[in-house]
Amino acid sequence: MTRKIAVADLRVGMYVQDLNCGWMDHPFLRKELALTREDQIERIRSAGIREVYIDPARGIDGPGLDAQEADREIEQEMVAFAEAEMPKPRQTSFREESEAARRIQGEANRLIRDLMQDVRLGRQIDSERVEPVVENITQSILRNGGALLSLCRIKNKDDYTFQHSVAVCGLQTAFCRALKMGHEDIHEAGIGGLLHDIGKTRVPDEILNKPGRLTDDEFAQIKCHVVESRRILEQTPGISAIAVQVAAQHHERHDGSGYPLGLKGEEISQMGQMAAIVDVYDAITSDRCYHKGLEPNEAMRKIFEWGKFHFNPVLVHAFTRCIGIYPTGSLVRLESGRLAVVIGQCEDNLLQPLVRAIYCTRRERPLQPLDIDLSRPGPGGDRILYYEKPEAWGIDIASHLT
Ligand SMILES: [Fe+2]
Image (cartoon, rainbow, N blue to C red; front, side, top):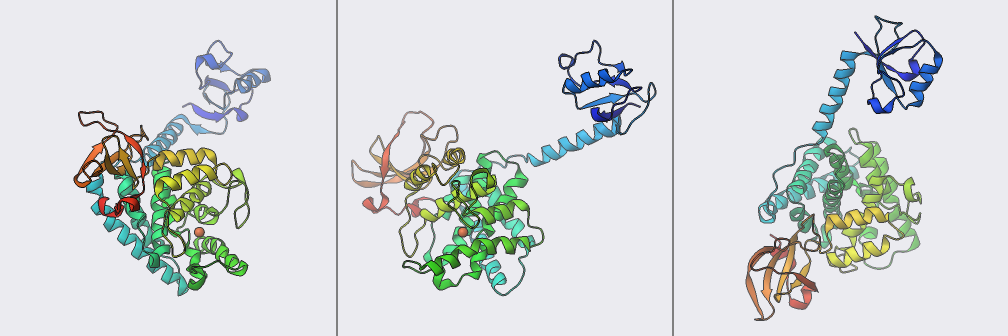
C-alpha cells in the first residue's frame, strides 16, 4: 500500500513511487525513484512538489496517509465543494416573485422587530429563529433579485430601522451572489445584514429619530451602536465570524474616515467593505423624517462618486453590476416616447434592463402595463434615452412594482 507523504518528511532510503505531479513539472527521467542521496530530495523540493507517494514495501516508511485514505480525503473535499455550490433555484419572473417577496419581507420585518424587543428586555437573540428567515430572503434573491430589493426600497418612516435591516440583508445577499460566493457565505452575510444595526436598541429612540441636527454628544451615542451590535452578536451562540464582520465594520470607510476603529483599506474585511456600500446605498435611497430619499440611479451615481475615497472602487464596480446602471425601481424614458419602470436586470447587459412600460408621453395617457426585455431585440424594439423623475409625472413607482 503506497502512502502519501509531505516532501518535508522525505528521507534517504525511501522509495518514491509517484512524484504526484505532471511530467513537465519535475526534472527526473521517471516519476518513481529510490532516494539514495539528499540532493534528490532537494531537487524534488525545488521543483515545487509538495506531496509524493512512497512505497513502504520498497524502502523505509514515513508519516502520512495511506493512498486510500488520501483519496477519501480529496473526495470529501470535493463533495463539500459541490454542496457549497448549491444548485441554482429555478428563476422566477418579477411578477411571480413579488408575491413571495412581500410575504418574506413582512416575516423578516416582524422578526427583527421581535429580536430588537428581546435585546431591549435583556434577552438573548435566538439565532435559530433567524436562520430560516434569512434563508427565505437568500432564496428569493437567488430566484429573482429585483422583486425583494424593489419592495425593500419602500419604507414607512416609523419602522425605518426594521425595514433598513431587512433591506441591508437582501442587498448584502445580492452583492455576495454577484461576487459568486458560496451559499454558506451568502447566508452568513445575510444574517450579518439583518442584525447589523441590532446595537441601535442601546440608543434612545429620540436620538435615533431626531429630525434636526444632532449634537456632538448625540452623534457619539449613535456611533456606539456599532460597538454594541458587535458585542451583542459575539455573545449570541451560533453567530458566525462573517456575520460579526458585517455588523462590526459597516461604518468603517476605505480611506480610514469611518468608525468605530478608523480602519483603512484591507484592514477592513471584504464583507465589512461590502456592508459599508450596501448600508449607505439603502440609507440614501430611503425617505427619512429629515430628508427625502434619492432615486436609485442618483444613489448609484453618489456611490460611484464616493467610491474614490470611502469605498473600495473594485467593490463599487461589482455593486454597480449587481444593482445596475438603471437600478430596479428607476423611471426611464424610452426612445418610443413611453415611460417605463425598471423591473429587473439583465446581468450580461446593464444598459438594457427589463422594464415595464406604463405611460405614453406622445398621447399623454397611461398604458396597459407591458413588460419589455430591452436586451432582446425584436419587432417592438426600444431603448432607454434617459432617467425621468417620478414626481414630475405624478407616478407612484411602488404601485408599478408588483
Ligand atoms: Fe449602522
